[in-house]
Image (cartoon, rainbow, N blue to C red; front, side):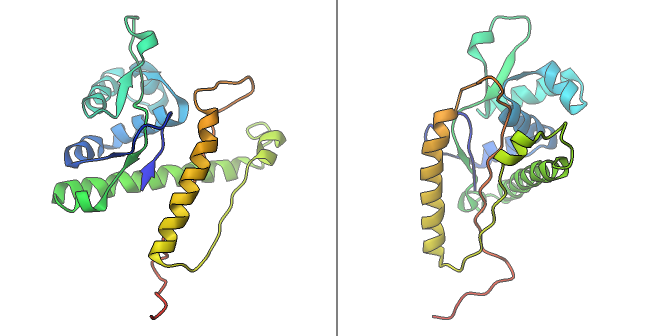
Length: 203
């Protein structure tokens, strides 16, 4: 249950206060935009999200207070502050959330919003496949949507997840921070979880 960000410092497990600080609809939207589209100002976020700059500015400060975002150093001292996601993957630990009922509710909200955001991004891509202006052939042909179904134990599922994460992140890291001509934001998704309507094989 983690989200990657630009660069790869150690995994940050979100505590109760951080979860409560993130679990707000507009903060989740701001966080998502910064992840998908890179640094933004309160004004650019307000325009993209249909909010006032005063509102986005307030929630940016709250996200910064909980270390989810940081001011972009190269733009500090300018007329308007630019913000980016704090580098590093974050993890929502079910065990940590269970220690505080409010944190548990916040964790559920955060995970649902992440899932909905990923689903919306995939659905938007699929919907755009018939529109060659929005999705030119060169991008459609370079994309992929893969699903695998397999029967495994919890230990095997963890092994698959750990191996996939280590392997893909080492490769993806080679492209972080680049802005090559002709590039555009891309989202890479991997989901691996037990099917709720499935049953365990008897021992």
